[in-house]
Length: 207
Ligand SMILES: Cc1ncc(COP(=O)(O)OP(=O)(O)O)c(N)n1
Ligand SMILES: Cc1nc(C(=O)O)sc1CCOP(=O)(O)O
Ligand SMILES: [Mg+2]
Image (cartoon, rainbow, N blue to C red; front, side, top):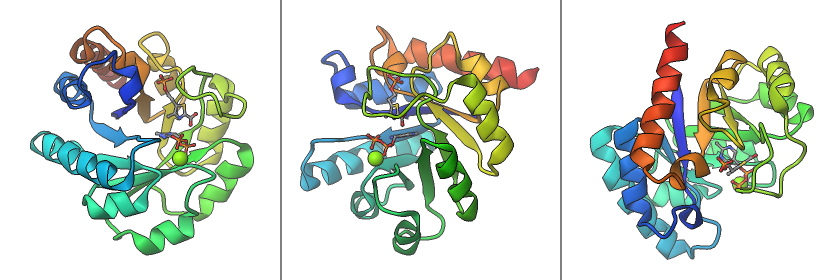
């Protein structure tokens, strides 16, 4: 079970992004996605390399949002793409076979199309509406998550509005990864927030 931190510098309350990420990893985050929507290419590469150096001793994989070129240049562990990013077939050709590929599914058609592909995970996008990303389609909700679970062969990551109140229910309904921005990045203590989320995840895994 993954506790998957997606970064957003604007959500970090003015604190250093690398500090927030490292605290969250110490608390129990198991995968990190570097999500940069406005950095130039060179600055994105530099940030990705620095993030990789920070995550390496913890054995936590680094995923790059949207940009396969940045992932290759920084030797990140994988890429996350959405429905308007690079198509799966091109990504598969460009990335070494061992790299992680995550894809967002916004509709039932997206879920069924993804059955043809060799993904590391499929993201249920969004599970709930969230101020952290507003250009989304209709949230899946728990009933939608159950439908995806019944119709997809891929491990499922849920994203959008996940926090300590709904993580357990999402796992019970089929999520294998919980992806989070604000409940960790904007927490007073990213360490404690991640630790509590990890505790909830471990608790439900034992049931
Ligand atoms: C784990 C995870 N799931 C979904 C997304 C959203 O990807 P996308 O739809 O491409 O939107 P942007 O993040 O690029 O704005 C994600 N990044 N991570
Ligand atoms: C990056 C992202 N992608 C989403 C999707 O639905 O695909 S929702 C989202 C933001 C998630 O932030 P928070 O944990 O603060 O709700
Ligand atoms: Mg994208």
